[in-house]
Length: 237
Ligand code: SF4
Image (cartoon, rainbow, N blue to C red; front, side, top):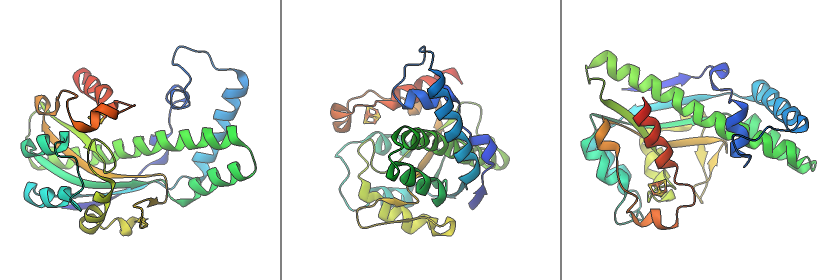
């Protein structure tokens, strides 16, 4: 089963609080009028230029083990390697916001509008995460339609380049998923085009299987332990 998903742009417009947090402004700090103005302008650029779309494809555990092995450069132990054997279902995915948003970020930077360029970059990063959430919902709905996995089944996503999954993993992921169908590609340094894109695996497993301690080699040098935030959110669901 594979699905190309046209993503409703209005559903992935990020909230100002999230974007400002991405900009390094603490959540309980009131932004200045100037910052609000820059945010509003960036949000309008995003609304006008965003062309979000995504694709996911179901994959067996055996096939995923091969995709995950990639070019053989992953860490010796990783959260994904320990969790995916417990999955009820797995899917590879890719989402992109299209080329125009990234071009606009570049042009703002080239015009020395660093505040505008950086804010649009944050809006787009948050928007890409929301687009991935949208895709995750599509995958979960399909799972619920075909099976009765129970309310304890939850999905978390992991991407090449993070948590011990080497960036070169993009090669086999692209080979299996074919995100070229949604006009995505990668270069010889595994950098994706369009830039504001996310790829990875969605792991649907019983809630308790997603939890882990930060004991992996990748965790020692991790500056943004977003896994803790995601596991806390899982607890709230
Ligand atoms: S601490 Fe960082 S590297 Fe380790 S699992 Fe969490 S997000 Fe990944």
